[in-house]
Amino acid sequence: MHVVYYDESGDDGFPQYASPLFVLAGVYCPALDWRENFEILARFKRQLAVDFNFPFKLEVHTKELLLNKKPYAPLRLEGAERVEVVRRLCEVTAQLSLRIITTAVVKPWIRIGVFNVLDKALSYSVNRIESDLRSSSANRFLIISDEGRLAKMRSTTRRMQKINFIPSKFAGQTAYRREIRHLIEDPLPKDSKESYFIQIADLVAFLFYAHTAASTGIAALPKRSPAELDDAFILSCLDILKPVLNLKASTSHPYGLVIIPSSP
Image (tube, rainbow, N blue to C red):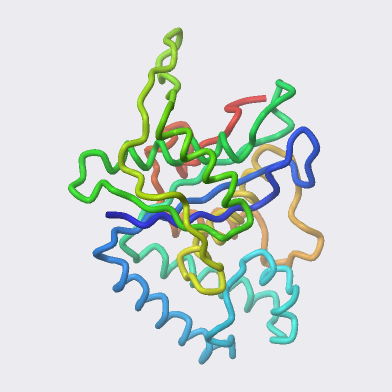
């Protein structure tokens, strides 16, 4: 079995929205490797406490940390130190036994009036995970996320188990039907403060949000960003994460990011 953890960057509103992008990251970890992964991350957090006086029980919420917002401002970390914490988290994540799939919805590219942003992003992600694990003996999976969008996620996954159409990769061919068979239970809640794995999903979602914003010209980095947080740093982090990114999810993107819609 695999445990899948989800987190996002941006809001899922449409046609009214607060952010032009919505990025959903899914971290799927083999259940047999969960304990070892957890212990590696716990050791990493203990080292952060030594090197940066970063409280062991304080979660790493990437965007808020980089922008020096609460609860991180009282730590008085310099911009270079905050960026270094994020870089180190990428390095430790790349060593773990897990995979990551990420989808980005570019809202200004949507040309229809009704578009369920979260449903589209989650549907692709779950379909890809189901496909990846189908040939594995550990092909069952369970979804865990924070409570914010749990009801919407539950609706999507229940529908996918009853009726699910997958777009064909070949031009001119219609979608084919294949229901989700290996998902266990409805998505279950967990506070990100209590989950290293949701914090990794948060990290990846933010990095891909920043990367997609820059590469499409849709948005810029927040004004409060430290000088060290630039396009080169974002790309270096994604390069570090490459060993655990599902690059096959999108062969047209160097980091496997699925972009919906695929073009303006």
